[in-house]
Amino acid sequence: SQTIHQWPATLVQPVGSPLSLECTVEGTSNPNLYWYRQAAGRGLQLLFYSVGIGQISSEVPQNLSASRPQDRQFILSSKKLLLSDSGFYLCAWSSRRDSPADTQYFGPGTRLTVL
Amino acid sequence: QKEVEQDPGPLSVPEGAIVSLNCTYSNSAFQYFMWYRQYSRKGPELLMYTYSSGNKEDGRFTAQVDKSSKYISLFIRDSQPSDSATYLCAMSRGNTPLVFGKGTRLSVIA
Image (cartoon, rainbow over all chains, first blue to last red):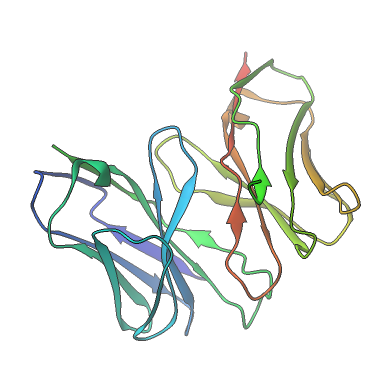
């Protein structure tokens, strides 16, 4: 069965510090991968998605970036965090080979607080 | 007009009540419809999936799609305190990323 991991689970960072969040998927190959942010009391905001290694689509211009160095690894980064970057970051995967509906499966999330 | 509209609630009901959660959408090309449940501080989990119009039942949950009205619903029968969560609708045209509603927060009071 497929499993998705995210770490760290919780992170407190000062303004201006760098960020690296990691997501890995097990039990599937060539997944579509997604990064979302969910601010307190708000909906899911799609940040990036990737259909393959090195292929990244950015949905929202900001100081965040994403990379996919391996088939089942997706990394979210920032060089300098802003207060507005605080939120709940979720990684998700889907398999369009198996589902044209793009049914997505989510990881446990990383709660980021920027102080 | 947003592609997907969902009342954020909160919705508070007594245990045992029938709950109706709804979303409206504007893009007639959507043909795949999903409901996710998200407990506090957890990632969303897929609850129901429906293709095109019609009903789908799974235990106490029923998903309903009315494409002519661009309206989808999730019904929860005999609601339990463990159903207290945020429910997000999501939809897709197919081979494109899902579009999510903002979620409705539900509280079932014992």
